[in-house]
Length: 474
Image (cartoon, rainbow, N blue to C red; front, side, top):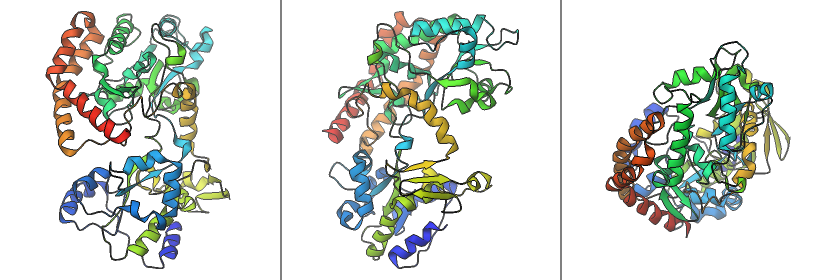
């Protein structure tokens, strides 16, 4: 990799590289931390929670004068710094950023625009309009094959552990009622939400009950398949892509139109439709907008390293924007063409290669500034086409006041309590929620449901998240 030569030149030293595959690393990580024998520099190996447990990493915040590229990164992206920073201000593991091009949630609501056009319908703006559209999808043969085989709205089977970690949960519809989800990551997957700085669990809200009732109504009318909550992922995905010629699905939650395979040209993202009594100005969308940009587990330095001067020069060079682009996407000029200081373009060799040519967002330790653009990223084109639809709804909430920021990290002790509470809550809750959607009954049973969640630790969990939210944000 050509960019590694820049690191060698920066430190005027020899760099010994050691690569460990993911499966092997899962067995090596804990013993390495316990022994304290970590490498001079570790990339994509440790995260801030590891540093919280074992004091083997250097506080890089004290070296910002020697890390001007990192300092610029933190100045431009203060939330990225918070992602790695302890409450006392130390930074033991550096984050990375893929740049402003990746700002946005990875979860979207897609609708078959070809079907809408054929039936003379518009993208629905409210739940009532959505239901009318779904009814038309069911009854008016929009795919034109003469069969009643359309699936008006397809939803995924729920995780047993909550509303993640699998993406595209149908409770994204909470945003239609002004509760901001954060389903890419974090405690939102266990029901935690934030409204104007106050933490709660959305399973105890009227908004949650309203979504459950709406989903039951759609399913009872045949607008959502009756087996939606029991069929496996392979069948769900097959229904999205169909045979590549005749679409089956009208509406689904997905990453982008590309999830529909050869039928991708038929689909567009749609803004969240407003729920009952909601103004369009109060409807939101999934708040995981920085999770796609930032990664918090990118670079750590051994505490008191005997080669600290050289190590810091290497770290600083890794966060040079030009080196960062090459880390993410491949060496220049073979895989990345530099058009000017702010513009790069991937070459065709990236797509012709049978091997991985860059480290990607999973492994690169670097920073692409907001004013730098990388063109010809095929998957980014589909992502932006989907996510830009939500630009207005992203303006309807505050990232700090209305979501649980990714940088909020409870202590080990509190994390254990939270995890134990979540396990017992969702062992009880998910079967009940599924039954309500299929068979109804939420109105009569909801108060008892919430009371049961309280006995299983819901209020204690909310209080712990409130404590740590306040500690990190105030």
